[in-house]
Image (cartoon, rainbow, N blue to C red; front, side):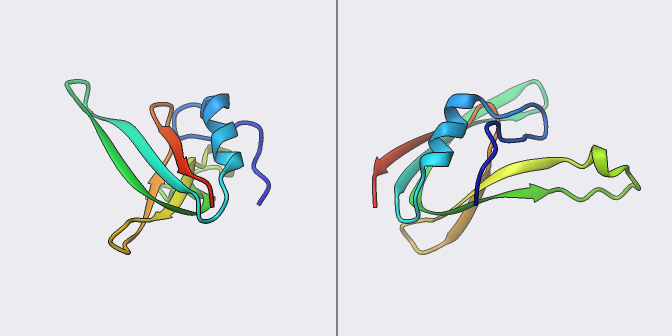
Length: 104
């Protein structure tokens, strides 16, 4: 899949530096994803997960209201396999950080 120069996000485009890292990922690369998660405006925490990269695609979120196609919310999603075999995915935001731990 060819990725655009800037990845979409539900709030604002993903930073160019993160886009370049995602564009360079190959199936089998070992990665670490760190994100700051916010709840309301009062709480936030940082969480990290590691695994083996599988794919990147875009998730068009569904809403329960009738909207114009231009209003669709699309987010970039990174798919990976955790060490315990669990297939997992993370949607990217401006707070996402991806580190390549080992190339395949």
